[in-house]
Image (cartoon, rainbow, N blue to C red; front, side, top):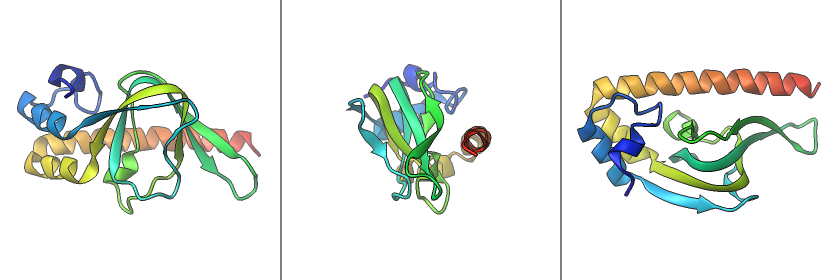
Length: 150
């Protein structure tokens, strides 16, 4: 099981009460992926949050005007999160996450995670504010990447 100390290193969880971090740790699992593996694919049902422990993940979107996917962002620094679609309706991944190298992830199932946030509204508000920042950053990155393809 992941430690509360490691969880607190993720910006999403910084400053959360240790009791809540223990509950998050209890529902989390670690997983390893090989270079070229997909963690998830664009359009799939999103039911998890993903956190990079080690490795590199390319976030790619398909364009109807191009045969290949376009890389819109990289998650390559430990303690970054991705897969925010698991906590935002309509709960479908907006990009594909492909391992650029062997990667080790922390995975948190969205439904029990959201229940914990509902039970801890002050912390839940902070987490959702941080997720909004991640979404805004990814939107900026996506726009820049897409403009380069034109």
